Length: 193
Image 1 (cartoon, rainbow, N blue to C red):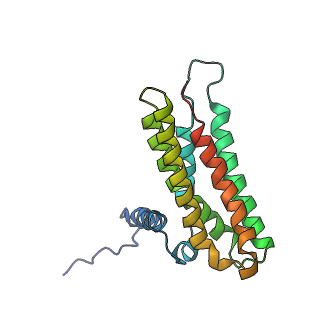
Image 2: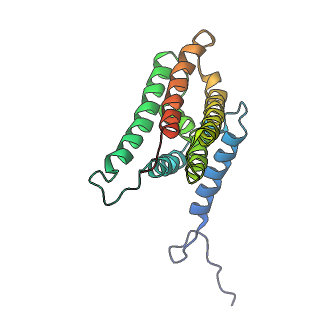
């Protein structure tokens, strides 16, 4: 007699397929942000894994790193986390109030994934800060932050542009600009202790 083959749904078999599927989906969304074009893929298949990963990574990199000091950087992590999520929620509510046809979680997904360039900027700035401080150091960081800020704004507006009424697109893009500007300012003014 031939043995019955185990089906993928058997409780006795552990399959990494759902995890790999999610990781591939997050990777594809990162690629959409790195090469922004008008597409509804990020909107159609929304998730909050990528935004959570990026937010936590950015918040950890913005830590001062002073463990033995009285201010150990604990509130800074919470501040970054709250600024990112409160800002994304505010922009989403603004979009809905302007008559946008995008769901709450779709907007959070797009805004969160578009923090990727700013997270890369923070990584580059941390590496540049390892060198001696000076005007050249600041100019390099300023250039990197400006480029990545523009990339984040362009990427997010590429995904969110079609969801707004034509006569209200500027009103919807302005808060996005401010949101990424605040995050960029936190990155640019970061100095390790």
